[in-house]
Image (cartoon, rainbow, N blue to C red; front, side):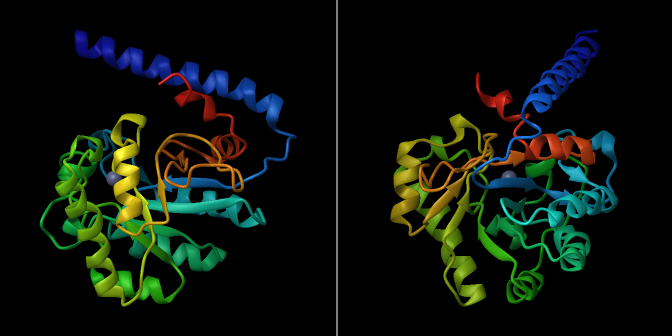
Length: 259
Ligand SMILES: [Zn+2]
């Protein structure tokens, strides 16, 4: 019974969020936004949706609908992917070439190296494979940027300074030695306000990163924001073209305002 009630509450909460966001969209749809919207995707493939508890997978067809919208916008949108799923190469990469879209992929080096499985990242039973280093090198040469999403995907705010060095410098060194050039971007695992703090930001800067992305909804202005708290706009499996347009206009930025 409690589970059913929880599900009903979840569905209702989402419906209220969609309704409020639609009203905001009506007010902001004609406004031109200044700055860059950074979208965050995860898996692009076909999965058992009943096991996709975080709604992180988007079908290739839906992703193509998104790219049609994004490729028509001249500037101000960036595509990012977190974790480093193999389907980013199989499904997303060919579509990004087709539509002339660039992206940045933030990889978990222990996931790529086969030391942790996808169950720990995106829910049990999805069985998503990681990118291989060969696929990463191929995309790197084709203009896809790579960044770190740490070594093991922990909550960074709970780590000691020594453990932070392992996660931040260890993953950076691993990617740089494989690609043969420096990387300077980081995406915090989980990315919520409680998943990082000023100590994490300082450690990231000391490790040589120039910027770090959160998963807090919002747009990044030019030269006014803290480069170690860059916002992103989360995209979910159920987000069709209209919802993406609403998100690009900032209609959903409010959802994290009270967290
Ligand atoms: Zn992640």
